[in-house]
Length: 401
Image (cartoon, rainbow, N blue to C red):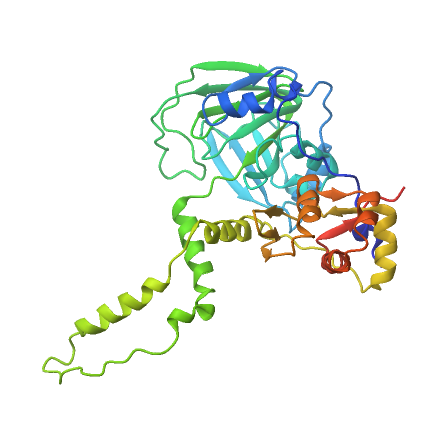
């Protein structure tokens, strides 16, 4: 049995109290930040995380960039030419750390490192449905990715070295054509700061910015999901198509009793279009169906994520261990819920009413303590569900003491 997959490395962070002032937000409460700043204006926060240590070392980041299951990019600006390459990158294929003007970007570090996951957990005052990942940017002196904008909110946390940020509220977002990177054609900075370790800059969507390393540095970008409505519409229609088989109003076949003999056989019968249009009115949806779609869609694991399945373990043995260690959602698991449904890794469940409070607590806290598991041990359906999810690799036992 793979104990490293069965047991969590560390306990995950729980919910954030919306009414407690946080250093992370410059002394603001999460409630005030979401009301007054989020999606509205930039905010510079000095010493948001005092005494911060990089979640991963430079060498560990280079090792992640060499993995097939980790998304990484290399940006260079040598001889005034921008170049972009996609990983994985063997360490010997990266430029030397003394070479100026290159940047390594590694996505989803929170999926592979407990410290990065803990860091992302500090931002759970934003709903999990919007949280994306922690990207770490390593840069040598002069390194950056050029003036650009993001389509989503982002927190830029300096974790080592120094980086100079210039930002602009400009509305002109035209890009330089025929470039491997999305670099603004005309960038006019309005504000400028140098961020030291522990400093953080929040930027709302489409706010132009340019960050340049002053010496070797590392920056964590905590990014958020902002799916395009067209993308959501396409996925929703695909999801809706899966409900057709269960729609009784769409039973039967098209029939045309009384159709006249055709004089223009290639002409589409008007009656056919009318009849089908009438029958397709059965494809209606309401807000609860949209909620179920969103829970299913937004809890889908990121592309490339593979869960470490556990060899079969007897349910009784599992229940004993769960009551001793508690249960923890795997780092890559995404759990959401609405009024009636629980969603985990793209699967929707409509659990009995007595199970829902425990599942909500699991999703909000990303764990249930040993005492909580023991308390709900008289709910066999819940323990069987936890057992199944653990064998799938979606759920883990709490850390070994």
